Structures are given as structure tokens and as C-alpha cells.
Image (cartoon, rainbow, N blue to C red; front, side):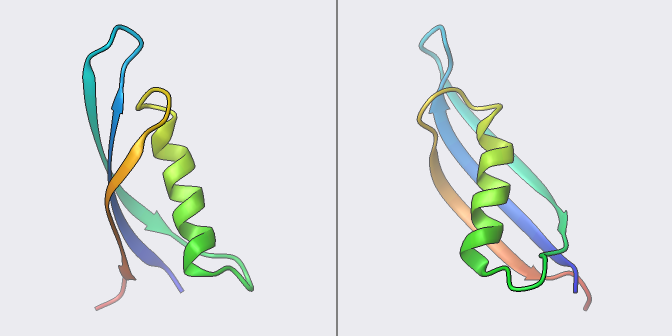
Length: 66
């Protein structure tokens, strides 16, 4: 089953500016994956664009099919 996710992170860039990252997409969890597993996968992917020590502000995970 496919899920649509939305995540917003806040962090600091290397030059000290605040960064706000928004990412959305569709993900298919693997067998036995939990909601926490999916969050970690999505967070890790988005965090790479946010600088060190990003903080999650928002996370949503819903079935993609209506």
C-alpha cells in the first residue's frame, strides 16, 4: 500500500541562517515497517537538505489512495 507524506523541518545552515524545509511525496513501506520506520526514512532524506540538527515541525502520513 502506498502512502502520501508531508514533512516540514527547521534547521540552521552552515552560515547561520535558519532553514525551513518542506517535502512531500509517496512512499511504499516494506513488510513489517512501522510508522516510526517510515518517519525516520522520510526525516533522514529531508534532513540532508536542512543542515545539522534539524527539528521536525510537522509530519503527516496518510494512505495515498482515496
